[in-house]
Length: 210
Image 1 (cartoon, rainbow, N blue to C red):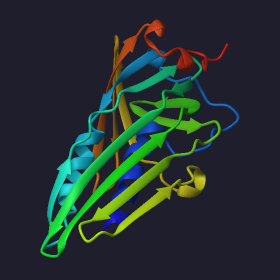
Image 2: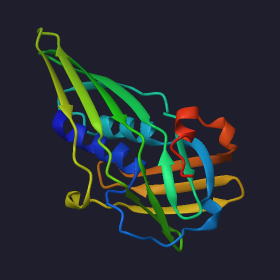
Image 3: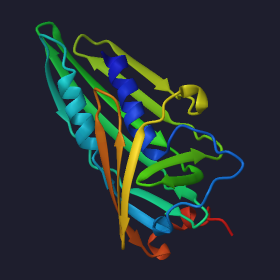
Image 4: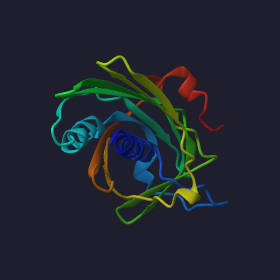
């Protein structure tokens, strides 16, 4: 059950950062409304909490400690080139049974990603240049004294075969999009607002194309 939870969590957040494809040599320019600097949040924290609660094993009482929503940031340029801010998210929960309890903590880190964004109608897709590494650290400690720590760094590319459905709405200084992930996760919604470039961290601005 812990392995299933880890895999679902990886799919949930990593896909929100970018779609799992390498970029072709050239891509058409996207909807011009998308050009700009955006910050905001998504519903990943709520989706993760609901997922873990639904996956509670029989005979187990599970308490999930909801994570704080992570701040998201992306700069999109007119040709579709994009740069994302690094993303860090953690989540923990406790399972209690007649035999004892287990505390689990997950820590996910997604570095800055660069790539190109494409649109077709209200559909949205991304590709990466090159794919960036996602790192998930999971630590479990039981009341009996046992413990385990795992590190997962899945490869993100065409071999994954995973490209979720994504649609979007852009108008004025508002950008919203939905990433439809398979069960047990479900849809994750993003809500971003356009901001001046000066609002972005300096290291993030330095990654912008000349």
